[in-house]
Structure formats: C-alpha cells, structure tokens
Length: 609
Ligand code: M6R
Image (cartoon, rainbow, N blue to C red):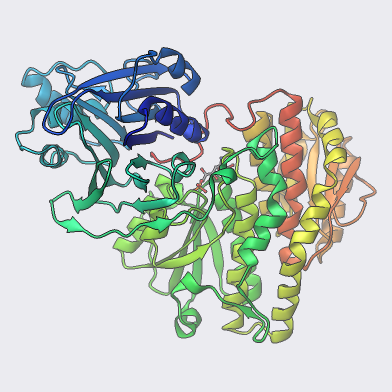
C-alpha cells in the first residue's frame, strides 16, 4: 500500500526519490508525489516545490520539471483510503503558505472531527484526505523547533501513521514519526534516507535504523537522532539489512512472480540452514523464546494470518497436530480480531505474515497481547511490526518478495511450520525415528522443488489448455485441502479466473452440481492413506463429463492430465504439491495478458483495515 521515501544530503534529490518510489511500486498504489526543499541553509528559510499526479511513478517523472533540484525531499506513493485517487489527494500535502509538506502512511481515525474543528477556525481544506489535517496542525503549532511542532500536532491525532515532514524554514532537516506504520532510516556517507520499506533504501545503504511505535527521528545530512513523541531521547543502533539491492531486482526474469517461483529451492535451503539437530532428531529455533517446559505446557495452538499466510497456517496446524499431537487450527486474522474470541492462557497463538505489516494480523496480535496471551510470529520481513510485537518466533528467510502474489514465501512459511511442528513434537512424544524421518524429508525438499520446476514447459502447455475456463474448481482432502485453497487463490489473484476450493469430501454435498465440461477441476491427489477416497472423487467428476487436472504422485487414470510431483513424507507432501499450481496460475495469467506482478485492485501489504 502507501510508500514513503525521503533523502537529505549533497546529491540531487529528485532522481533519488523517484528511484526509491519505483522500488516501492510493488506495494500497490494509485498516485504519487514529491516535495523538494530548494535554496535555504541552516538558519535561512528555503522554499518547497512539489509535483504530484494520479497514476504511476513514470507519470510523476514526466511532471517533475527539469529544474527541480534540491538536497532534501520527501516522496510518496498513495493507495487511496480517504478520498478518490486524483492529483489533489496525492501526497505530499502542503499548508496554504507552502511551508510544511507531509507524506503519511496509515489512517487518522479522528480526521473528520479534526477537520470540522479546523474548518470552524477558518482553515480551508483542498483535499479529501485525512493527512491534510496533520499539515494544518503542524502549520498552526507554536513550538520553536520543527520537532516540537510535529509533536504538538501528533498529540491531537488518533490512528496510525508513518510520516515524513519537510519545512521550508528548517531546510537542513526532515522529521519523521511512527505509530503503527513502518519508518526506517537509512544511514549513508554524509547523507541520510528514510523510507517505509527497506526496498527503497538498499541500493544506497544497508545500514538501517527501524523506528518503534511512538518514536520519532530528525535526520540531517551528517547525522540523525531518535526520540519519543514526548521528547525523551531513545537509543537505536543501526542494523545491517540481510539482502543486497540485487535481491530486489528481476535478475533476468520477465516478472517477479516468475523469479520468486524459480527461487524456491534456494529459499527452502535458507529456512533450513543451521536449524537441524541430527543428534536429537530435532531442530533449533533460536528466536522461539519457548523453553521445553513451556513447550510441553501448550494445550492448543491457534494460528492467525490473512490470505496466503492463512493458508500456510492451515497446513501448519495440520503438521502440528500430526507431529506434536497438539490440537491446532488456523483462522483468518481478519475474522478473529472482530469476534471477541476466548483467549486461553494455555493456547499458543501464532501470527503468520510475509510482510509482518498486515493490519488485521497486527491488530489480532495486539488484542491477544492485551489479553495476556503468548504470541509467536512466523514472519518473513525481519524487524517488521508483527515480528517486533510478538514474544518470539521463526523467521522464514524467503528473501524479499516483490510480486503482490505470494509464492516463495508461502512455501518457506510452510517449511518453517514443518520445523516448528518437529520441534514441538520432539519435546513431546514424537519418536527419534519419526524425527529423523521428517528431517530426511525436509532435506529432500530443495532437490524435489528443482525437479518440479523443470516441468515448467509442460505446465505452460497445460495452462494454455485451461486458460479459456471461466471458472475452475480446486479440490483436496485433509492435507490436500489447504493446497487447493491456496492454488485457487493464486489462480484468481493473478489470472482473474473465478476459482473455488472445496474439500473433496464435500463434493457430494453440493459442488457436484457445478460439474460439466466447461468447469474444469484441479484435484490434489497425494499418495497417502486417502488415495482411494480421492480417486473415487475423480470417478464422480468424470462420470459427469468434468475435465480433470490432477496433481499427484503418479499418473491418475481418471484425470485428463496429471502433473506428477515427487513423493516426500506424507506430512510434508503439501509443501510440494502447491508448487506446480503456482506455475499453472502464472502461465494462465501470462496467456491471458494479465499484469502479473501487480494484479488489479491488490496491494502487497494491506496496512489498513
Ligand atoms: O504480508 P502478509 O502475509 O500478512 O499478507 C497477507 C495477505 O494479504 C497476502 O497473503 C495476500 O493474500 C497475497 N496477495 C497472496 O498472494
């Protein structure tokens, strides 16, 4: 969703900010803008120049005048919440005197109330945004310093924000603040960056400081300082970003989705690296903060996530039940947070998120923490909001995922759940023999993934055959059902073909009515104790002239086509069975000419309600 970039230093700011905005495009947005501080030096006021537009960053580039130089600036990509996506509502927002410019991520909950008060005082609003109230509050603040004015304004604000503020009278600084929306400082050589996402910074510096909620910072070309919104100094030491700038590039692929699917064998290697303990047939998960006694005391596991992360959680819950024999289930975090759920002290709650920023998941975690629950995170983005809020957890080390549609992170999250299930199992009754069996299975995954990816040319041909479908049914039973759910989400997100997932066991209870030649079924058919039941479902579909594409461990006689995947341990099979269906979704979308990396109406990180 919205993105922030800022720069202060000796270099020409506009090109740097535009490049930063391009790196944030993957998050999804509908308009973009930039404000540059020109002239001025310490003690002498400068002036602010702005350009903004509805549309893409390349449209903004065209609007930025040639003479747009300056050595400090802020820029933004906006995902409309308050007010339509148009030039006026695009950020940065300025006060009438054009002294203050603000870019803002998040939502100001009491914006309507503040707008009414300010309007009654004679303030004229130009946009429909919630952000504009903040601009007027800063402009009206009485404190001497810019920091003081921002603090004064923030005292009126209820809601979430990540902001960057430029002021013509304070040309040598940018002031930023965070509450519920990420703000990261990038430390360069006599230059400083700020962004809402490290992706915008890593081509310039890998030394970063992530602000906490309630924290602010002043950045100048040569230094920075952090403090609370109340003004007390805070100490934040820089950390090194794990991934280099190239990890955010296409690396020779046509799309990020293709690149990220192709990276999965290496990504799984990373989530396993250094964690397996052969001696005790278990794994070490350093960040879990759960000693064996505490692990044994867990009576239930409840997993919360949204979209693909929820689907990974469904597989994780099955793995935990199977390997650790702890009752476990998964629920969409977006539902859980609204239903005043009973929070049980003996339940271990696990929040799952690629971005670690998804608002619904974060809100669920905060509600659980408020009620005294222990919450772990299974997260990809290191240091993200949910990772910081959780009591401990497992990083999934999928690396940067740029495509809006999640692929490699799903796979790595499920592998991370395999590790967690094994760990919990081995603190309970899972035998050494079974522990070793699962470890061997985990070790086989990268080579098996590489084997599946080699089938891409055949899967591409299949995708072309099925691309004319208006709707598709995905079925799976027990371990196969979450795979079907995730595969159907992938197809609909990226190809816009309607797809529905059903438990194969439920076919007779309704969805069989849909079966006809124009409604193909994708069936997940693992070779486990339910194989014959799954084959019976294929018979039922075939008897009604339905077309079937099976994903199975051997050719399925009743299917029109079978994608054969390598067999692993029964509990780990779901990790592999979804991968060919990522390729199917990709090639279907390609055949239909879709905007694969940025599907319509979707954002990579859903940071609002
Ligand atoms: O960053 P998160 O894992 O918390 O995101 C959750 C969902 O928004 C996300 O998985 C979404 O469903 C993706 N578009 C899936 O491809």
